[in-house]
Image 1: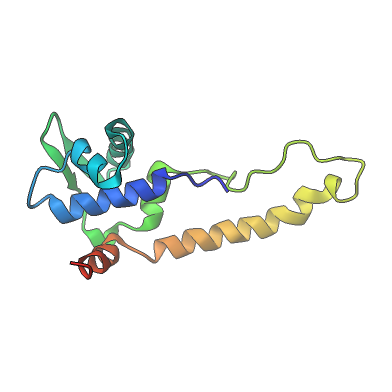
Image 2: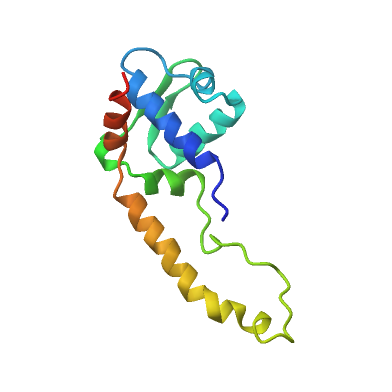
Length: 141
């Protein structure tokens, strides 16, 4: 699979913004401390989330804010903002042996099944929103 850690970092980032933004200025440095990541990586993720219109970022040290209601932002929204993999969710080996009955048919054997897996995952991500995750987070405090 080609899902990178940007996805979970983006969820962590969104939850930090949702939880802390009414208490402090949530900056890339602050989020980087929470995620134990490089602030440059977090700034890239913030840029992607902003481009997807999920957050607003004030220039300098103004902080980041969630743009819409938490229940209206799903894991799928975050996934497509930072880790969209299009139709290449599953990465096939590049040169199957076309002389082999399996090798020459591997795409026709697997493509439809793997597409169903990807669509099921997408639908499952659409069922979980940030409000739910934030509620689960608060249970630990």
